[in-house]
Length: 203
Ligand SMILES: [Zn+2]
Image (tube, rainbow, N blue to C red):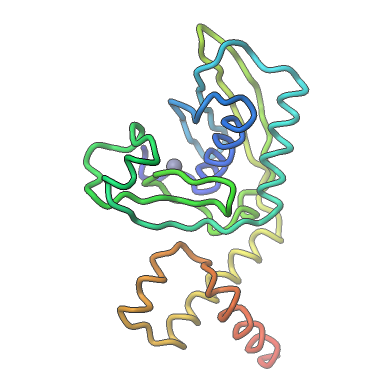
């Protein structure tokens, strides 16, 4: 996996994989090319998709994006992760602490790449084309540009996490919470009200 992978495209890939897995029981893609403008995912499959199925996939993925689910991470041991997940797509040298990325209660998957903080940052998901060749279904997709709403959300969540750090003077105990990708639950329970209070009173 490339280092400079686009977080929006990458989170969209995870949601697409879970959607495909739920709809067709085909599992996650076995190969993916994640690029900033257009990405593609390849699935082991037995046919191409109908127009209706393509629309259904788009709707499912966009529903998850619109639900603005938090993207969180946790680390578990390799032994534990092998019981629940397929680690084939992870590089061999990731060590014994395996990072698990969760998208709300929709998707969970071992992963080393960067992600958005919450799904609304992804923007609108659109399938560009679908092709089928020799047992491989290829889905190409793109994302609509971030609207102002998305940018505002991201800016706000960054501020909140900074406030969280300074207001709590994080000790080692709190630091483990911060391993969770921002904005974590603290953002909503604690930091966002503080941020909103300061913003209102600074005017
Ligand atoms: Zn990933």
